[in-house]
Structure formats: structure tokens, C-alpha cells
Amino acid sequence: MSSIKLTILGCHSATPRVNAFPTAQYLEINNSHFLIDCGEGTQRQMRKYKVGFTKIDHIFISHLHGDHFYGLVGLLSTYGILSRDKELHIYGPKGIKDVTLLQLKISQSHAKYKMIFHELSSKKSELIFEDDKVSVSTIPLHHRVYTNGYLFVEKEKPRKLNMLNISGYPEIGRADYLNIKAGKDVVLSSGEIVQNSELTTAPAKPLSFAFCSDTSYKPDIIPIIKNVDLLYHEATFLEDREDLAIKTKHTTAKQAAKIAKDSVVKQLVIGHYSGRYKDLSLFKKEAQEIFENTELAEPGKVFSV
Image (cartoon, rainbow, N blue to C red; front, side, top):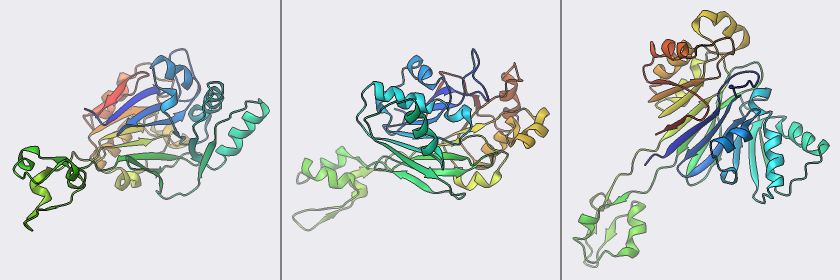
């Protein structure tokens, strides 16, 4: 069973179009649920692809360009209409609290649930969220405004019980299982110590997902995202417009693939395509020349690990 399930809600750059939706992703990791970016039309896409509104308690916004957060105030208003009562945590650049609360105030959108804003300003990677299931750290990026990507890492799961070996020790009962799964040895009444390694097997390696939003080519993020299982990296342009990528502080498909290769990631997903390109297969072709395991982000497409 997969521990990571990423649903692409939107993956195009700039303005919404008939069949093109700005950036938004729904991430399920280790039974936790997160919304990453919230461009216009995100609510519509959430309904279309059956994303559970009520499961989301944490929203991560990469930067304050419209195609990444103009859908946020609408979503927050909808939560109010749906009589949400759970608190909601919103992470994003400094200023996100003011701009969001002002819109809600002027539109008289009265939400009864508590919104907790976590405003970011550091240009160094920092841990911004952690519970017993997952940790989230920032990935400092380089764009025209202050921008972060986000690294999601599963917490290590408990060790698995080796019931065959445990059955060889009648003294060991169900009451001992929790301590054994936590890695503790067992001391028998005779004084004999049964090593935990005999009673358990190691859990699966914790999985990880890195979201790299709008950014120029930035190799110094490689140590942060090294060996991740799934990487989303923007690829606004093809190599033929690298000059425009540099000017607008975006990345080409080839550059995104080089980041993936040098980071030794397992799989790369690219998106945020410029509207000037009609054949998106060219993005995949260009990236796969550098990094074979590359897929295109598409609205409604699900990536599982």
C-alpha cells in the first residue's frame, strides 16, 4: 500500500484557461492530508477529483503570485459556508495573513473556525511543521518574489512484529507488543534478554516528497532534496527559451531534469508549463534526455509511491 499519493489539481503557469489550471496539489502522506498552493479554480478541481475538503488542516503556499494563491480566500470562505469548526494552519510568505484577512473582512466572509498563519521569511531551510506522522521543511527557492518549496518526510514507522519468533516465547504476551514495536528488548522471568532484532523486522524506509515551485535553476537545493522518492519541479520553458527562463527566474525542463539527476531522486514530475507551448510532450522528451523517470503533471493525474 502506498504511503504517498499526490493528486495534481492544477499545473499550468500564469492565467487560468479553458483546459489549463494554475498550480495546486493535494498530498496524502502517511495518512496525513495537505494542500500545496491554491491557484484560481482549486475548489472546482478538488470537487472534480473528489479531494476531501474536511481532511485538510494544513495549507502550504509557496509564494504570493496570483497563480499560486488566488484561490485561497475562496476556499477559506467555502469552509465558513460549510460550518467548519476545526482550526486551519496556513503556511506562506510574510504578508499572507494581511492579504487574506483583508479580503475576508471586506467581503464580510465570517468564518467561525480558527485560522493560524505561519508566516515565513527565512532564506535558509527550516523545519516548519512536525507531528508523529510527518515533518515539513522549507526549500528556499529563487524567484521574482520570496518563494519556498516544501519537503515532506514520513516519520519512521514502528518495527514489525515477527510473530513466528515471538511464538517461541510463551511468556511474551500481547501486552508486550507495543514496547517490542517501539524497539525494546524483552527480559524473561529467568533473566534472559531476548534481543528486539529477534522479535521484529525493520519497517519500510520512510518516504519523501519534495515540491519545488517557481524558481530559477538553483543547484544548491540538491542537498535538501537528496534521494527523495518523488520530486515535483517547475519546468516553465523548454531549452529553446532558456533566455526567457533566466529573465523571468523560471526553469527549463532540461534544468529540472538535471536537478533530479544530481539529487538522485526516484521519480520526477514536471509542470507549470508556459502557455506558449501547445505540445507538452516536448517537455517530457527534453527532460528524459537527462533523467529517464520523468512524468508530466496533468490535472487529475495521481502519482503514488
